[in-house]
Amino acid sequence: MMSCVSDSSRLNKFLRERYLNLPQGEFCQVTYVWIAYCGMDLCYKTRTMDFTPKTIADIPEWDIIGQTEGFSTEMLLAPVCMFRDPFILDSNKLVLCEVLKNTREPAESNQRNSCNKIMEKVKELHPWFGMEQEYTLLGVDGHPFGWPRLGFPKPQGTYYRCVGADRAFGRDIVECHYKACLYAGIKISGTNPEVMPSQWEFQVGPCEGIEMGDHLWMARFLLHRVCEDFGVVATLDPKPMTGDWNGAGCHINVSTVQMREQGGIEAIEKLRKRHAEHIRVYDPNGGEDNKRRLIGCQVFSSINDFSAGVANRGASIRIPYRVAQNKCGYFEDRRPAANCDPYAVTCAMARTCMLEGEEELK
Image (cartoon, rainbow, N blue to C red; front, side, top):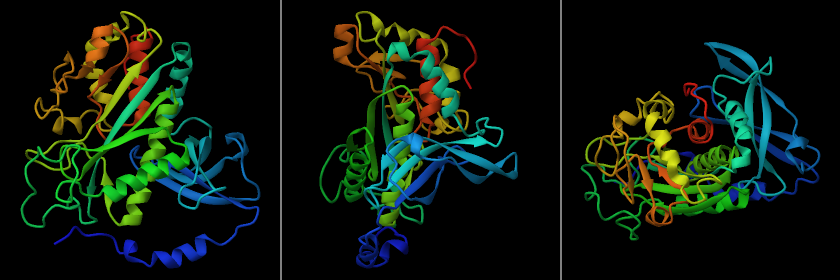
């Protein structure tokens, strides 16, 4: 029996196209996207504008009913980054927003605000980031997409970057998401099947500074919307299946002007000193999610120990072989969980590797 897909995905899509192809005159649909109060989910709502915005400055703020400390309250959506809409096409827009309180202070879930301040402090270092987002496809019943109803698929070992109907489950979703990101203007740089069946990865970057978080969050939004069309779910759970099945991470690749020069990889020693602090910000639950994933095997490092190695996928920090030879370039931190907040991760990375302050990471 196949995985369960949503009822909505079975609706007649040809009828939908009839309406989407109607002319809309000079009007523009602008979809505001923001991070929910929990810090993990994404929300959206759409408004009509009587002109096509050219820059983010053309997009007005909007109010929402948010939730803070258990009470509903009015919040503000402050537009920060604009993309083309791959679902209803040009000239319609997707707009990523920060959530602000009515006092204009950042909401509790707003990690972008503080991250942007740090990125301003280190902008002369031109920090480049690339993040590798892993995710797992599920049916709407929570069962891994393409897995047999009773029992399990063949053990891991034949799925990683492979082709074939018995190995790659959900490729249509992956390809459609890739195209949607390219159309939107997201800096997606690649994709591949992962070790566990129904698990995939896409990469975003290189991005400089705050752009990393902006582009990854919008890429996640597009992923969930594409999956909605196909009637399946993309989970960012760091360990969606118990047992001898791989978890899901969001590895981050880091480089600055200094690291791109001879002897620049010394920043790794700074990370060693703050291992525990980084673990706390590498998933939205203070490291509790990563406890299920960073178990010291299955090419995952131990959550309790820091390690670094050349071409070592089982280390906390992997130094590519060519980088080790050249003694400059970039490194990969393999600790962030799939459900991490990229603003929190890049902010922590900048504070540890690019600033000299000893303030505790939060």
